[in-house]
Amino acid sequence: MMTMTYHNPVLLEESVGGLNIKPNGVYVDITFGGGGHSRKILEQLDDSGKLFAFDQDVDALENAIDDSRFLLIHQNFRHIKRFLKFYGITQVDGILGDFGVSSHQFDVAERGFSTRFDAGLDMRMNQESTVSALHIINEYSEPDLRRILFQYGDLKSASGMARMIVESRQVSAIATTDDLKKALGRFLPKQKENKILAQVFQAVRIEVNQEIQALKEFLLQTVDLLPKGGRLSLISYHSLEDRLVKRFIRDGLFEGQAEKDVFGNVEVPYKKVGKLIVPSEEEIKENNRARSAKLRIAERL
Image 1 (cartoon, one colour):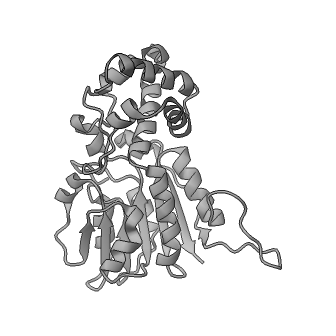
Image 2: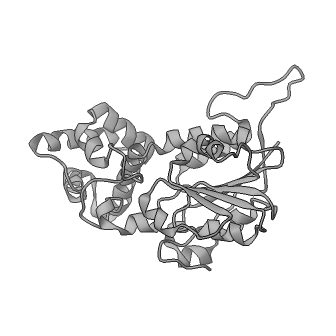
Image 3: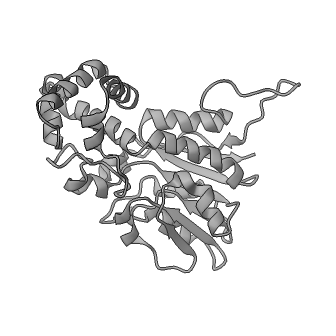
């Protein structure tokens, strides 16, 4: 397995294999990160092939690949159509996405993603964004805090946690990850502390980065970007994302029922390719952060 200082690419062979790469094709890696998936794609392209990659994190730019077939676009993938069009691209042969937070982001203490370090509340993937975890924890109303903790963190104690955050910040600002842990202390029994904190941090991070909205916007744009036979290869890490991807592949919608024609047939943009793919025990042993990964592959109809 490929090892990189930035992070280990998850489900590398399976996700790139799912693109069914044509050597002269045009492909997009919407979550460049350390570039592991991109390098694997480039290995399979000939001189006329092209790979575009997106990443909103300025740190990822340092990993840019020096290759005439490759271009790294410093933007959120929710703007995929607009920026590809800028480079004269209106259709591509395949799109790969790995929606996990990179090991690099978790391991740099001052980014505030990890429960392991005491750091300022940040969690911005795009460091130029004006909304950070600090703003959400100290400025959001109690109902909004309750909503994100329940919806994005699946926390049964969301109401009590939201109330406690509001009460704590009235005494003094909740400025660091440790401040947040202290504010939520009564909801963190020793044996479950790490698991519950991970859910809290996940919920706040999703809100900071508008991850669910960005994923929906991206998925809708793929329908125009991929021609018949084009492939989607997408890795999710929590049930909220995975449900959206699964539902969109199945119905072309996020909610409601797909419309039927006069013959009762449902017209959908994709068909799934194979079954859900999860990492092997061996991969999880080598890279613990792969443990919750789920890969879904789809083909444009």
